[in-house]
Image (cartoon, rainbow, N blue to C red; front, side):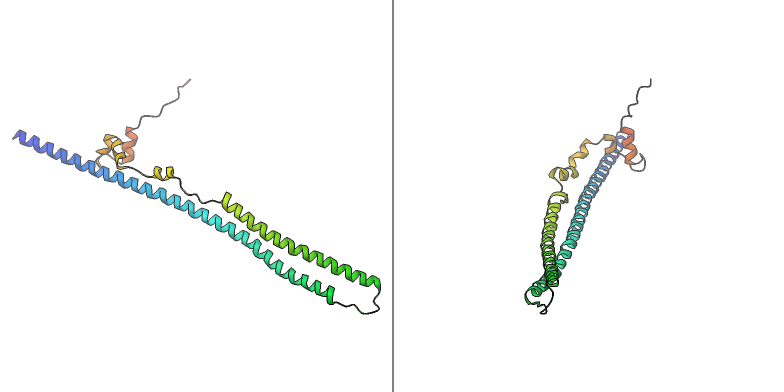
Length: 195
């Protein structure tokens, strides 16, 4: 009878131990899976944040390009008006020479101003696009995770074997939370010697 009771107690203890072990292993793997998903989500957030920065760069540079293109069209039309005034703009006969000189000087100045404006608008548009490419390729790159970061987020099932034995067989609600078991098993922090 005593042997039967001892056998039953040993079997119950073994079953309880196996159940606790499986329960804690499943919790460990679930926690690690959640940690891995959290790390992947953080990596995804970083990539999306960098995409937003890249969009901002494209939008800001795009404003410059659109503005310069608008200036280019308007100034090219005005430049055409200046050429037409040079070629077809006739001054009435008997106009004083000093007034003809002022007229020619004004048209020449307007032509040069508008020509430089068209040239600088094209230059600004090309420069803005070149700077956009430089920013996007050198400074605002997507933070693609390295293989080491991906491996670091991963957990192997065999890592449970390295866990403290007390934590492997922790009884839920009786022995407290996992954090308390971890803190109880951790060595006390070294204190500085007092002088």
